[in-house]
Amino acid sequence: MAILIVVGGPSGTGKSTVGERLSQDLNCPYVEGDSYHPQSNIDKMSHGIPLTDDDRWDWLEKLTKVGVDATSQTGAAVVTCSMLKLKYRDYIKKIARREKPDIKVLMLFLYNDYNIIYKRMSQRAGHFMKNSMLKSQFNDMEVPENEEGAFAIYCGEKSQEAIGKEVLQVARQVMTARE
Image (cartoon, rainbow, N blue to C red; front, side):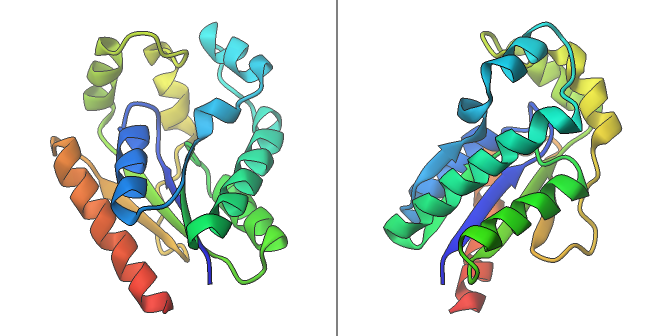
């Protein structure tokens, strides 16, 4: 059975760094969600305009399909995207199971305090997601609680290394349980 691991959370939580490391640790493909945004989404975010639900559906569908296709290489793939709302996570699961009915979808949701993320985002350069948009992400954020296949991981002041180890431990437990 294939497994699609989605690392999500608001911008600035380190999901790309953690997702890339997780894919290396599991020796499976990595799919960076930001690479699949249409130019219209990138333009909006670059101008500080938050995405709407309608801006996200096609992007989430395309990203999920790419992730599911990538599982055919090793039986697993890691994808990153914000997946802030329950309905986005449900949509990803629906698309994944439509594409591959027996796939397991694991959602690892990284989250942190607003001020910690804002400070991190203020220090990074060259990303289209501006720290001024963080408030809209926190307004939309629904941290998973008792949600099938979803694990919330509070980052706090942990290092990227510590978060990576925690994520890997959860992923390995889920992957072992599916065998």
